[in-house]
Image (tube, rainbow, N blue to C red):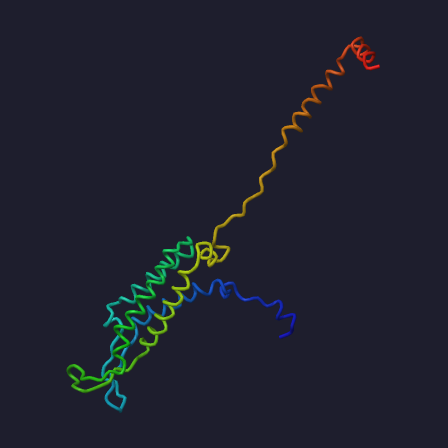
Length: 212
């Protein structure tokens, strides 16, 4: 790529630095929501790797992470559209709660060995599935991005919305009023002009004599 082409190259609007934070929150919330519908743990038969049983995240959380993800998206929309700092803090709270669920409920059971329920009666180990990694990435990212969002001021939150969607109208310049002194002088000159024309010749002559 030539130097001129590199100088004329512009990133798309949605990839600008000020828009990356809300995009990170959205992607993190999507990962948290997707984890609820994915396999969290897989239980295999010994060293053979034959899958015996799987556990989804929804079976363990009762869709709690899905509710937190939806709440985070709604709070994010309110924060960037209205500049509400409490809404931005709500995104951070949703990320913190989802991370807490991951750390306290799911992470302690990784690679834990134990007997399976009927009809298997085998000892197996809980190996993390795709949902576990989605939950890990989503909860950590949502907590970090939400925390960063909560530190912004109201005007900085409004700047996260593209300019064409802000609805801001530039103030039109108002015309300056005409000075009263100039207007009064112009009116006085207009009034004195016809009076001088209608002045009598005798009065004009007397005024000239007084002036001389």
